[in-house]
Figure 1 (cartoon, helix red, strand yellow):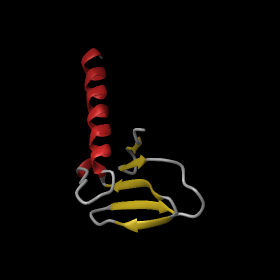
Figure 2: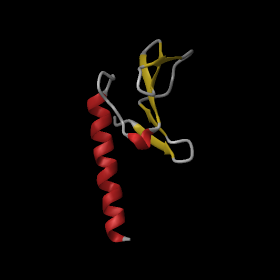
Figure 3: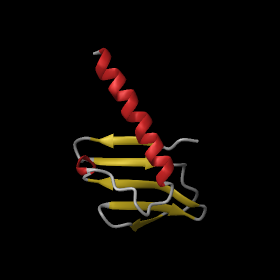
Length: 84
């Protein structure tokens, strides 16, 4: 399953959700304005602050999945811009 990606332009935050949380969650600072939310089953989501400056996937869990999802999103947006 692909992660669900949202971007809040006003706060410049990219949010990548892998699944719904089960029970209590904890947020871990991954450095570089990146925060990983986990529960007892593992990673729930990753939040990127100041996302317009770039998204650093180095050392993050599910980095390949996030990169693939962002590539698909870029292609979709490029296609929409070309038809506008």
